[in-house]
Length: 118
Image (cartoon, rainbow, N blue to C red; front, side, top):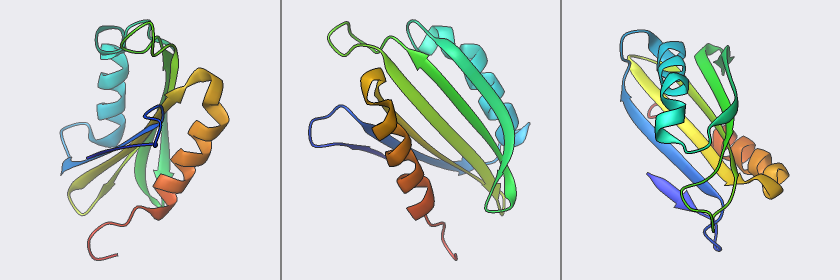
C-alpha cells in the first residue's frame, strides 16, 4: 500500500508479509546492500537493530537521488518489525529539503499503524 501527500512529494508505504529468513534485521541489511541498485545515488545509509513496541525490529535510513532529476534528492526512513510470524514494514520518503516533514510523517505513520488483533 502506498499513500502520498496532496502534492505527491511525501510518500508513505506499508508492506506486510511472512517473516523471511533473517528476520527484520536481515531484510533491512539485504535492502541496504541492494540500495545502489534500487535507489539511484544511494548514500548516507544506516541500518540498525532496534525494537518497535517491544518487538524485534530494524531501522534503515538513507538518502538517494530520486527516480528523476525533476524529483530531486530524497530521504527515506524505514522500520520493519516482527509480530506473530508476520513482518510489518512502514516507510516514508520525502524530498531532502522537507526532511523535518519526512520525520514527522514517519512518526505519525508508525505510531498510528495497528496490526490485526492489537
